[in-house]
Amino acid sequence: MPIIEVRNVRKSFDGMGVLRDICFDVEKGEVVCLIGPSGSGKSTMLRCINLLEDIDAGKITVLSEDISAIRDINAYRRRVGMVFQQFNLFANKNVLDNCILAQMKVLKKDRKSAQETAMEQLKKVGMADFAKAYPSTLSGGQKQRVAIARALCMEPEIMLFDEPTSALDPEMVGEVLSVIRDLANEDMTMVIVTHEMAFAKEVADKVVFMDNGIILEEGSPEEIFNDPKNERTRQFLSRVIKKEFVS
Amino acid sequence: MSLQKCFEIILKYWPSFLLGIRTTLIVAISGTAIGLVIGLFVGGIRAIRLDKTSPVSLKLFKRFIDAVLKVYIEVFRGTPMMVQAVFIYYLVYTNIVHWDKMVAAIFVISINTGAYMAEIVRSGIQAVDPGQNEAGRSLGMSSGQTMMNVVLPQAIRNAFPAIGNELIVNIKDSSVLMIISITELMFQSNSIAGTTYRFTETYFVTAMIYLALTSISSVVLSRIERKLNHTRTSLPQSDTNAHSMAIARKGADYADN
Image (cartoon, rainbow over all chains, first blue to last red; front, side, top):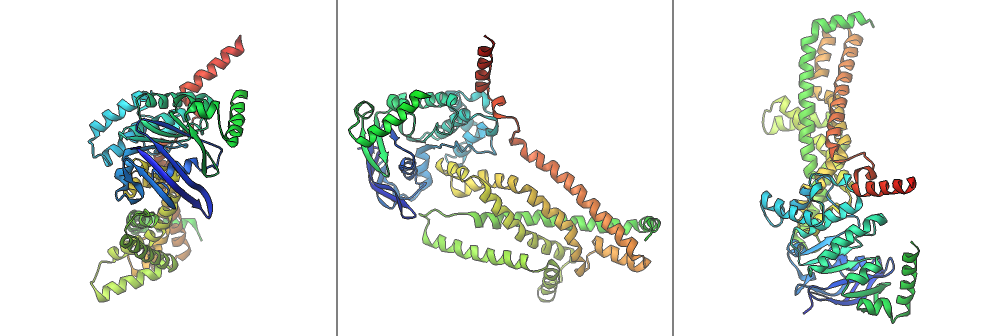
């Protein structure tokens, strides 16, 4: 049984259909990349999985639970980590405190064991030396690596990435992608919304192409990138890949 | 008006002025502090947005509380503190208990300030990036935990200039509390002026004392504000980031060759 099962999901903002009948599956340990033009509903889809948005119709089943029927949202969110485009590190807390706050409040760990977990995760993303630094002193890439470590401290079963590199300067994209790549190699189940086509091609087990609130095509990276069936997919890919080539 | 007379008044009546200053500061500072606590509660509760999955009873209860708090804010912002002072003082005095005038004064100034603080805190909360709340919630923290640990500390820091402004306002506006004859600075000045018949000089001294008190407060407040901002930096990002520094150096090497 898939770990995430999205069935006929619809969602609209002020009458504008953002998600129009979305269906897809994510298997355990799988890396799924959602790609597509801006405004196609990729981020909204991801936010629905983490209950940051409610769906209007359809059904999302995660970890064999219908998430719209979940009573304890907080317990559910603990199991599903989320990384945002804008990092969203707690501005009033230093790197270490960013990583231990939820461990202490949600997992009820004591400070010492929370710190141990935090330092371990920070070491993994190469940010252990910055434990005492405040977010405002970090670069975008560093912030995003801390945000990933913070999410991992909760030992989630699924990680959701909402355009994790879109707000970064080009030279910092690599450091964040390499952290995500490491996670993929550890068989973490991940859903990644991204505009980094080369990266999607490399790490994804499955690529889902969305446009205008519907899934136009899904398949293995080879199928999507080398031999897209849909005319719209082909058009989109040729445009973005040409752009990547130029820059 | 003669400056010499002013000095004479100060020399002769300084103990009365000092007593007045003491009372004014006690009333203003405690009123601002208690008002801030009230404001944090009221503004915090008003800023809470319940989850869509919350039970209907809780949603209705929240609506009711919101309405009550809104009335509180409107009433206390919409009537003069002088009127609030006499009304509340006599209301309690004649119906409930013969209470101390100082207690009454601090009570009135606190709930009055609380009404303003509530709006300051609420707008401070709304100015915090919604992403901060989403990040807290996405880690599994409840809205209350996120509010207390993440949003409120940042809201207070954002709103600190406005919060400090309330202290300065209270130092001055506590003068209206002389209506219930507490011995604050304005009350003392009235008695000195009444004794000496030197109205201009006395009130000039009074004005200078108020100005000194508010100026000192401004300095202290801006010191605290600087301390609160230690988590912010004015250094440009590129100078704090080893990675981009390395790239900058590489660029320089390239240019040299």
